[in-house]
Amino acid sequence: MAVAIPADIRTAADYAVLLRQLLPVGSAWDFGPDSAFADLLGGLAEELARIDARGQDLLEEADPHTTLELLADWERNTGLPDACFGAPDNVPERQIAVAQRITGLGGQSRAYFINLAAQLGYIVTIDEFAPFEVGSLAGDLCYSEEWRFVWRVNVLPPETDLPARQFLLSEFLAGSRAGEYLRGFGALDLECLISRHAPAHTNVLFAYPIEPEPLFWIDFT
Image (cartoon, rainbow, N blue to C red; front, side, top):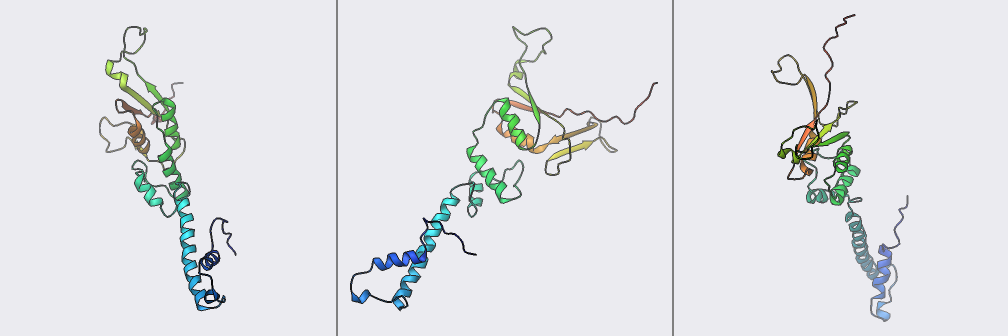
């Protein structure tokens, strides 16, 4: 099946014509298409056409959305694959990861971190704290001044099993030690990513609100 060639890419035949036009004028340069000199120009034209095509390839490689040959170089220069969640499974996902790393603007708002978690498939809420001071209301919690720079990410438990997620599941079993939770989970990739993007002057906490299932029920009726 013939491959369509973009109009801006010159073929070997195009370069052969151009080379012939650069030759001096005279009967000595009037040679047939099957002559040895025509074969020489054809060989030179093949290389010029190859370089022309590679130049067009470079335009594709200059865009992280379309790069293939230089994808590994793009990843190296942008710090990918990400240490928090590893390498994507296929080339399109790797291209998207590079583009997102380059175009990402960052942020410090709740919406930014909620969206950051959503990109990994998590649903979170965020709580911020304020110290108890003049103007605080009755019933407000008595946080100290240091809590002004603390915020908490509440990670909702997964509704389904997602093998790709770095969930750290744990249950209190035989051999567990005193002080361990009865049941819980952790989002390792999410904690890594949010901790990296958290403002340097703040401390971020992670909470996993989950109710352990009762071991047994007692019916008092």
